[in-house]
Structures are given as structure tokens and as C-alpha cells.
Length: 262
Image (cartoon, rainbow, N blue to C red; front, top):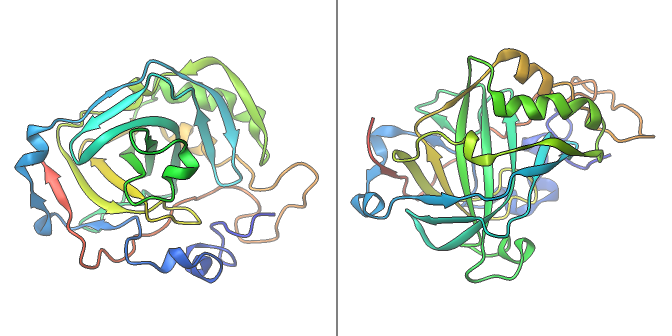
């Protein structure tokens, strides 16, 4: 069984006991207080641009949710707060609530596209240990209509019910079709939102959410947090990934910047 999770006995409040970085001063997620964000004209002068020539063809049950993996070669994320070129490693989703909130308001979920700095580092693992190593695009998910690209993931979930199971997607997921407009976004320096909570992430969070149906979100909750041959944990979640979000932590003395205003 995993030594961390989202139940009362191993949830976010307990993480610092085993992962000291989780108690750091550059942690994520945070509550975005819009009245305190700084409009930064330099972000508009360097628009975010991306190129994702490869679609995700492998879906994994991590025990904490699903993760879609793809070949990063040829992908590219540049501009905005990023001084270097970043490549897309994987994307995943959090549900039950969004991780970041806006003026205290949460969404139904949050999608994360995780990139690493290929200009400076040789691998994702190396980059994950550096302050400018990772760049994550965060997209709020609100309940609405069926999302056709997400349905490809939903259709494959029965093949990865248990932790550690993976499957090849017969219909690969195009990350380009998951992104909303990114001309308006918030950015700050933070961390991974899961242990070991490395303080290596430059966050870019779109002000424009995407919509996923309630039935699709319910399908995400069918995943189990235990693997084949393991016992279902006797906790309040009954072994299901009902929720997999870390609540906001203090922003401290960090600056939240914004590109564009609604």
C-alpha cells in the first residue's frame, strides 16, 4: 500500500511527517486572491506557445488517479514566465475539488499538463529537483457537457481499475484538444501537489475552465488505490479514488502574477 493518499490516516495533513518538503515555503496549490495579483505586462509580450505533435497512448492507474503518458520528443512549451524550453512529460487530473481555488472558490476538478526544462536538464527526474525544472499548465474543470477527448480516457478506465495497471489507448488522447484559451492566466513559483512535493514548479493556471460531464467525473472515482493482490484499505474512502486533491496552502511572501484580466 502507498504511504500517502487522501484518506484521513494518510492525507495531505500527514504528508509533512514523511515528506519534509511538504512543509516548505514554496508549496502548492494556493488560493488565488484576485485582488492581490500583480498584472505583469511582460507576460503579455511573451505569449505562451506550445506544440504537442504526439498524443498520449498509455494510461496508468497510479493509485492516486490516472496518468496519461506520451513521447515528449518534439513537444514544446515556451513563453510567458518560462525562460527556457519545456517538454510535455504527462498529464493527469485531480477531482473531488480543484487544487487551486480562486477567491476561495473551488471547481469540480483540475487538469495538470506536466512539462520539464529540456534546455538545462537531461531528464524529468533531474529537472524535478531544480527550482526551474518543471512547468505545469493548470486547467480548472467544471461540470458540464461531455468532453469528447476525455471520453477516450473514460472508455479505458475499466482496464486500469487497480493500482499499477496500465493500458495502451487504441484511440490516443490529443493534449491540444484539452487546453482552453491561455491568453489569460495566473503564474507563480510553487511545487508538485503530490509527495514528495518538490519545490520545482513554475505554475501557469488558465482563467478559462474546461467542461467535463458529471458521468465522466464519476467514472474517475471508480479507480482503486490498491493493486492486484493487495487488500482494500478499511478507510472512509473504501479503497476508491473518490477525491485526490490537496487543499490550498499559504502563499506566504510569494507573488502571484497575472496575464490579462477577465
